[in-house]
Image (cartoon, rainbow, N blue to C red; front, side):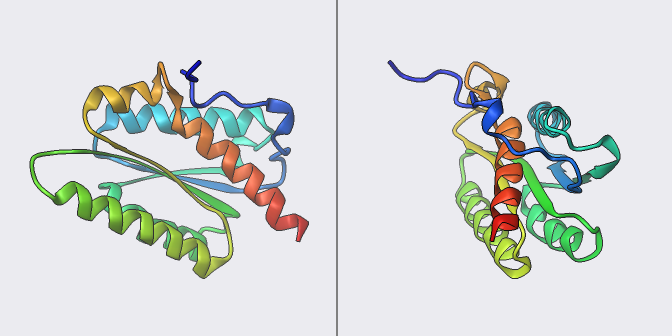
Length: 160
């Protein structure tokens, strides 16, 4: 049977977030999607012990800007990890491909540069319905997944 809610996870397997300061960056573009993803991430961080004052939420104009904003947040914001939230929906031109490639590579580069978790919670979908399905709809919430991943990666980093 195919799994419907892709965001299901075992709460017992998520490390405690107390003491971590985590950035959540969300693109302004497609706000009906990015707002839901951001809420999922923030709520999940709080559920796992991250204090509200240790969650730094910022908006950036679009998904393309997530990489540079994450770099700045890690360099100047005093955060331990950054969750990057965006939504790119396929259109009629190749713009989708360029943005998706640049953002995925950019986020990877920022994580490697700083040696801290930078989480890819960017939806890259064929249409708006697919995005909504992954932003609190029938397939879960990728913001929730981003928060869980950030906490697990912080615990991994601290175990080294």
